[in-house]
Image (cartoon, rainbow, N blue to C red; front, side, top):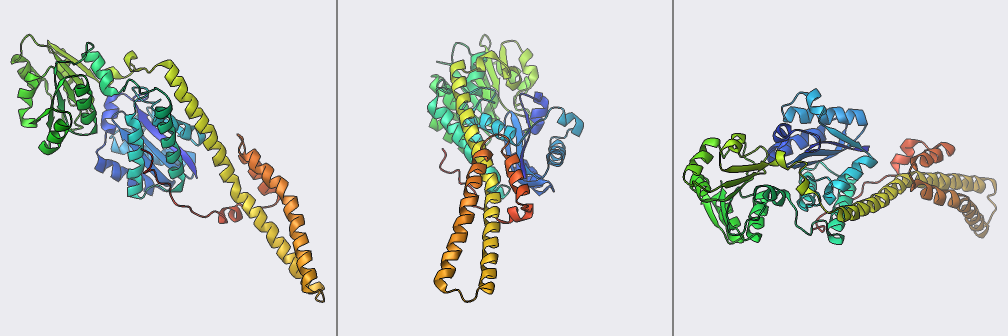
Length: 435
């Protein structure tokens, strides 16, 4: 089995396709189950955020895995397979591991260095664990990726400015800051919590409007703000200076008509709107209304303000490179271990057969002599096997090490099924301790 990544993100796909890929948790769970049930797939994890949809899978073959995963994803986002695959990126084996490490560290994010992605990677893995679609292979890779992300933020200043999609968006619609402004957050989920916290830290007054009044009240209380119900959205809009919408609702919430009505009640005051939802919460026609400044994920993508300092990016890249080299080296060594075990098992079997033959030929030998002969034969075999098995482990840790493992199997006529028979399943790693 081999690791494959099939993904869409702001790097590869237009916003309208990403909007269709912004699946609900129920849809993600159903799709993950279907991917996992596919013939070529052994394990699977889905990472779906506001600007990416990625499936990590342990696959039997590259082409078979790509075809099965792509067809399922295209169906769920209601796209032609050919159109869908034209926007997909693929990573395989070492490249797949490298990609996940870059994602977890924030290097692949729209806002480079943002820390939210680390929690999203952790939750994606826990989601797959709960769904029963992952095991030892992806468990080890995700455990390592979470360690990389944690190191990146602990050992560098990559997120010292607490950059996020929210801060990048506010830099566009409110470049002079939000101090003293009335901020309205539409939504009450994790992104809304980040929005409310960011506004509060900027000394803005915070109002939260959510579908679930209790969740909205809890969020508002956490930042010293107030909550309103969605039916009161018009009045809240009329009173707001800055609006951040991030509900994930399937339909547009802030229509051009609604915003126009709000503007009529607040002449001479500009309205700054940030839409970070997929699908979008704000009607694009709002952009054309006088007195409105609108930014969304489409305008944020590729914007210069989202870049992190070059020195911090370089520091994180060094951590990723260091962790990747260590992980791949350990992975290659682990791959050769079953062959070494199988070789030693074969040697032990040969020794046992020859000692049994000696017993038949020389029945008059006493127990002491038998024990000395047996110990001598085992020492000879051990001394002959020790240098090549130590060396093969060293060579396996280097790039291309798989060829040495194959050569060892060929030289000693080790059947692949014999090698695979010595592999025993191990417990899946627990990521609970990686905060």
